[in-house]
Each structure stands twice: as C-alpha cells, then as structure tokens.
Amino acid sequence: MWLRPNRTLSRIGLRRLIMVLAALALTTAGLGAWQGNVFAPLFALVESVAMAVALSVAWRAGGRGERITLDETSLEVRALPGQRRIHFQSHWVRVRLAPGKGRQRLVLSSHGRELEIGAFLADEERAELSRKLMVLLAELKGTWRK
Image (cartoon, rainbow, N blue to C red; front, side, top):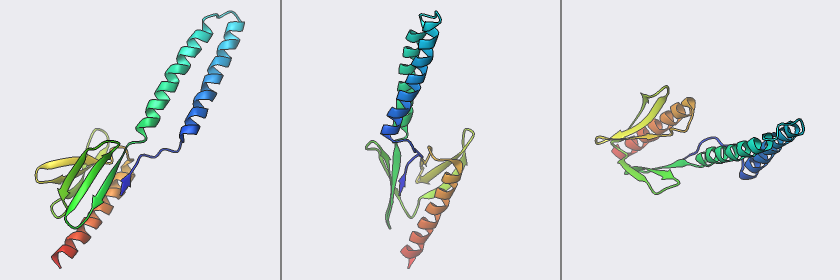
C-alpha cells in the first residue's frame, strides 16, 4: 500500500498560482505607488517572495508518504522520501487507533515497539486504513494457522 497525502496541485499549477498571486500583489503595489506610496512595491516584492517560499515548502511536504508491505512473515513500513524502514512480524503486530493531540493516531505495535503511520491522513482515512490493515492481518493469521 502507498499512503500519500491528498495533493491536487501539480508543480506547474504551483508555479502558475505563485505567478498569479505575485502579479496581483505587484499590481496592487503599483497602484499604491502611483498614488504616492513609494514603499508599496518593495513590500509587495518581499511579500511575494515569502509567499512563494511558504507555498513551495507546503507543496514539498505533500510529497512525503509511506509504503506498507505485508506478507506472511513481516509487515514493513518505509518512509518516503528517505531510507527509514521498520519491520514488524505480521503475526504479532497490533493495529490500534490511539487518542492524540486533537486527532486519532494510527499506531502499529509489536514487541514493545510502536510506530505511528498515516499522520498526514484525515481522521476518516486513518480509520479506514486501520480497518483495512486489521482485515489483512486477520486473513494472514488465518492462513498461517491452516
């Protein structure tokens, strides 16, 4: 399974949005300068750069994700981008929704280790993922006993 945050804006869309917002700010600043506010273009330029940086950082954060691999012996969670991998024995792993700071946390636990997954998902998506993982693990445990 691939877990990714909802991101509907493409890189091209992000560039277009930044250009439109900067053009609006600079146009408004140009009108202000025309009426005598000579510092308006400078402030609009600073605002446009800060807005572009903030939107770019937020957009890049939408590129993170998690890959969950489940087979008969192990459950592996790999954080993307990055190289962090965590392995659990699929027979012993437990899935639970735990209360957190104003939201529910989806936690995998086994042998004293815990890992929160899907922190970037909405509460409903985390609950659905929890049910799906419980069903898949139950099916694996049922086939393992046979």
